Length: 438
Image (tube, rainbow, N blue to C red; front, side, top):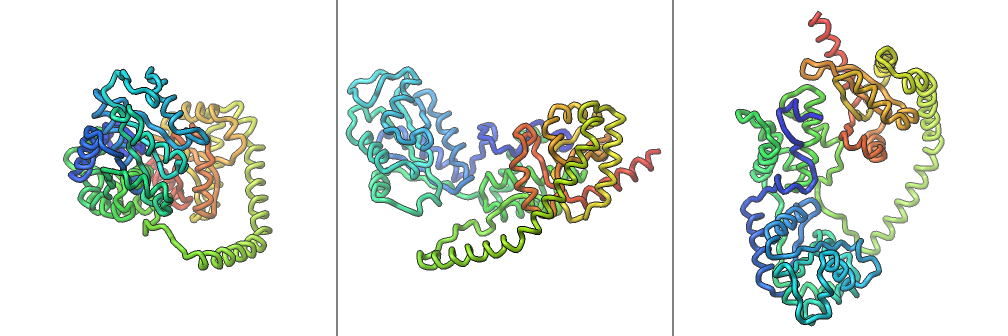
């Protein structure tokens, strides 16, 4: 959506695990080196922990890449195990790689020298299967070929069973993923921009002030840094700012759930009991008094949607052309102007060619027939742009919930929440530019 505007070749803050974007500060490099050394020693079980979004997955991917010449790396997630015996799951994974059962033989011929088995979220594995892992580690004659790496998030270690205690006692090497410092966060952001092909080497895209704010709210967790930076760039792009501002950062925060304390809440059992009762009674009262109000709101929204569909179903969705597109833009402008500035909508797509916006609407005809949408013109980088928005929400959380329910192909466009006040300001600026150009 914004790559060309910011002179970037590729999306810099995608949360996909792309090794091209791997960032290693001193501590992370020590962890990667330590994991590689631990795999080579053939001793005991290795454990890797860290907060959700701290980078455990990409570190393991980097480890697998470094070991690929000598190790066959197998990943096992608890969802793959279900009610199966974990040794049978290991066997099936080996068979997928043309290796006979390794669990009941003494002499195994393997194309690689060693086998690394990574258990993701190992604390969710049943006690019976955890016992099987210990058995395989200690008793199977072919175990010198096997290395076990157990991964878990820190919050998953709250409840430690006897079996988990036993398996933790057998851990020889334990590594914990650190959070990024403020300086590391700045380096991390600039590193990703560089790898994405950011071409303006004279000026940093994110100021140190914005980087500091991102670090504070993300608590130094790479995944949250990526999400906040991506949304900052979207906001800056929509407001035609070449560099993200504090307003863009605030917009990113408002459309992202951030646990500012980054702590889980713990209650003593007796307190939790009474709190639960209190919350249940309170919610019952709230739902009772608001039911009629919500019904009226739903009826109002349904009426808007039905009227919208009735008006444009035939001449817009079925026989959409430039003329009917302009009619839709004019009617959308009228609706935008009479909508309260505090209301929100979801920007789902931007196009510079009117024919492409027509094709986009026709491609998602089923979606647009069922939902209220608006189209307005704007100017982006001296080009006419056409923005499509979906929905009208008087509550930010409702808009956030609506985004999650959008079709996956529309989600791929990275939809974004905007206020009607911001859209009105943008349209006003666009009209002013058009007049000055004339």
